[in-house]
Length: 557
Image 1 (tube, rainbow, N blue to C red):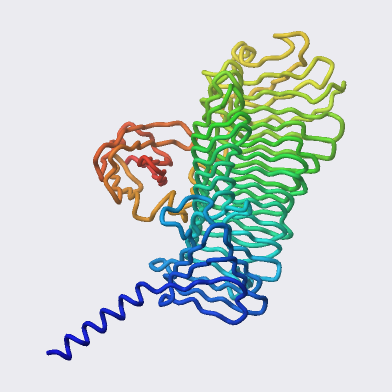
Image 2 (cartoon, rainbow, N blue to C red; image 1 turned 180 degrees about the horizontal axis):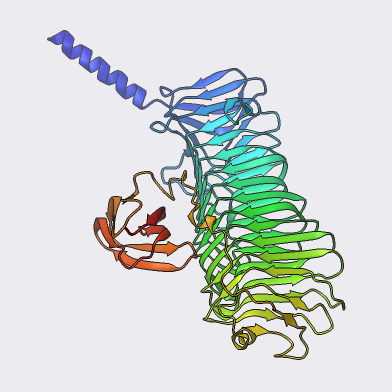
């Protein structure tokens, strides 16, 4: 009996020693090193540097804490791979942590780049996976600083930075399946990229300066969720010579004094497609392209729902001063349902000096409110008959807007050819009343709108049901279950938790809201579909914190 008591006492003593273990770190790490759970937490008491040619491996569950202003620089190879159940944590060493307590994890030029196979699977090199990086960013280079290097960040939470979440310069790297939130600067700051930076399936939320800043270089922004980013909105693209692809992202509840996506100065081959913009507030639209020379951008198959203007600005799209070089803008297959208050939904200002062409075709301009739906302007006046604008096969039906088309191009400059559109009616008196041009004010040019489409043009509305389903903040596999699907008379909706104060909405493929119900203290809801027409619908649930979306097909027998 005494031996058993002694053994139990010894085991408890050893367990207490292990649980209270602490390893102080500073200076050079000049050997292959493994930070284990037994030595955790590791306290970076002064700046630490992993020397080139060596590997630091951090085991799942390890906690790394940093004293004030301290950093960990990687000149070698960092292998920090946790698990979903045992994440690796980089955080402040203060008892009550706050944003900006410590500096950064810094991948320097000498660090070992990540290597991938031809189909994008990680093979080797510096990696942070299932890591939480918290309360850093004190020195202004983000919590994670990537300088002339290419680490791989996956399934990471990069939160509560005193500056940017990730600061990158002259790098080419991938960040996927991660959350970058609550940063005092941008979520992701790309000063200059030497290669292709991929931001894929990430949640970028509640960052004070904005979601992403991109200076010079190449970025791919695909399948991400942007919400509650302020100041510069979701994405600010600047400094020119860019190849930009922004595809299949969900932008909701972001605010900006310019645009939710602000693209300016010399973009090249940029494409913005298959994105959803909902409940954003901006002065110059969900997308604002300014001084965009050199480029042939395409903006297509996007959905714009319930975006609103700040200070009577533009709600959806501003294209300002394109031109100076051969330029083709394409805006097609987009859906519109937004509020410009006394502003505009879509504003275009063009130069007329070379070979610019603005294509606006096959769009639904439906149920927008404000002064005008489409507002045309010019950079300066030149005479001529150049048909610089292809405005065809669009559907205009906006009874709560004063004008469908407001032509602010001066008399003596180009006239506007807007034939082959549907204006909600074939009655010319109605069409004249919703178009502002020479016949309203003699100093404006003429809008020619004949022939008129006798019925609405067929518009590809595929974008209405494209949601980045891989992002937890948007849609969990079990968070919102709809059955049966297709449904005939009734739809049952179940949630993975009790919704105390939520809103359930249904939208048709034109973006029109067909149903709205408040939800209080339930986890299951029955919806009567008898008055809902056959078709494809988007069911959206807001639970008070985030949105969940599902596609439903209504098919009455």
